[in-house]
Image (cartoon, protein in one colour):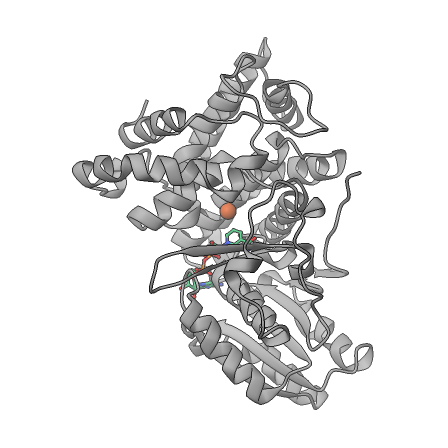
Length: 414
Ligand SMILES: NC(=O)c1ccc[n+]([C@@H]2O[C@H](COP(=O)([O-])OP(=O)(O)OC[C@H]3O[C@@H](n4cnc5c(N)ncnc54)[C@H](O)[C@@H]3O)[C@@H](O)[C@H]2O)c1
Ligand SMILES: [Fe+2]
């Protein structure tokens, strides 16, 4: 059996946010809203459109605005404490992936203070068939996600990551119970995103599509969303990057593309590009999207091998067909070639052109990561990437030495 899950409600269209919030009062009868966001967004008025509307609706609210990027356990505990005092019946997480992920963590701790992260953060292959039963969510509070970057897709994914700042251990949590109940995708919240955020988050969404398509757990449903999202990103990310707030159409297309990519990987999961990007980000402090952008070309070639050293295993997946799938993607977005190999190379060329347009540098070295420091951390990073949650759904099971090789290529360039 396979299935496909998304939040019960996804609102979209520029300007939809205040209208969607009316549902909290008129359909859901919510009385107390707890907003989770970061300092920058709070101080720059990103939550005002929400609080103004809540005031108009007569819904009581309070805001926690201390989310850090890559949310920490400390931040989660602090926010949960405020939540326990306020006792909301609705949580609205507003922000990029960090604020939405922090909101999910606080939601878990608010609903189930008795639970321990190391127990919840169990490793699994397919979250539909895990042994650990994640506790029921949504009994105390309804969870709404409002993305301000296009993006991580966290508004429609059942994932979050929390870092214990004392030990450095990251606890990835994944279960459909963690899926937001409502996502409100209003590109008005993204209009003034700086170029660096537009490019890093846009390319993150592109890698979500490519990894969901290659995943052993891809289905017709996830493929459809990922392909359409990819096509949209190629067309509109350069425009969103160049024109910013002057091109609302491009902003809106990118907002939808990121959410659609989120829906795809919420159900097909990711792959070794994200595994390597997670560790690259953790060890060398590169933004999540940039780390993915630096690895993706090598992953596409790596996954395309028809005779891999080791194949990924999943009951639905009987032979490597990734090269064909990438070629199908190329065909779908109008990239030609005389063979599947050529189509793949042309797809990579198009990705490289996109990266160049949105000013993403070519190598890890170009981002100022010191060679010695990189080489000193390489073995550990490679082992950790092998062990990452995302490796399991990659169509080709990498050897640690193969991960190391991809890291080296990405450091020096081909
Ligand atoms: N849960 C998931 O499914 C999932 C998927 C991918 C990534 N993530 C996580 O998401 C995080 C990264 O999220 P992100 O890339 O969206 O960045 P972010 O949330 O860390 O935000 C980066 C910066 O951009 C600012 N910002 C956000 N929106 C803005 C806007 N509209 N205008 C101006 N500034 C704005 C923020 O205030 C912050 O300073 C990572 O922690 C990553 O692990 C989660
Ligand atoms: Fe990502």
